[in-house]
Length: 241
Image (cartoon, rainbow, N blue to C red; front, side):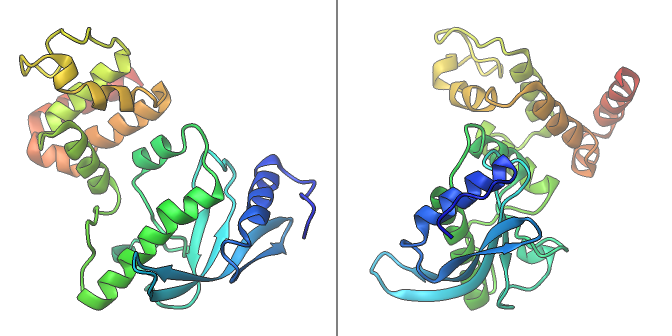
């Protein structure tokens, strides 16, 4: 298994990175199937005191856009129910982060060592916490509601109307002067208000921002909170398309 496969670039990158981390995760091995490679084996969860808390039998498969997209993580030991309420899709791969958070995390590319350490292990620790306690610790909701929660936290507001308005402003890519009033209308200087949120989100391209806005505008959560405004924006969006 010492050579890099002469296949698609994403698989070659994944394979090269997998070779580098085998010594760090000795219970994982590289397997080949259907012109691809993937990691398979047991992953131990060790706490800060060096104590083994749990272990999971997993597989990690490269995705088409890796390293600019998370690999697919599968739990193969039947510890996690195949249920979206446990953040597992119907095909068995795990839902680790909301779509906007994954896009932002992968914008400059990731590597397998980062993915396992910073994404897989915390996800599995949270699964163990739920098995022991009956609920997730620091859980985001699944799907569009989880994305709404992400933007509510990022913009420090519960208002979907404001989130949509402010995302539209981010799309203009016109960053205010640091001492100007913030675009949110708070009368607070931009650098002390939503500068970090703007700079984080402007890393997304216009197509990604448009997709996010479309999901929010057509979400039932927005319609429930602002039905008149939602109908108006949906009509405007449909006419624009």
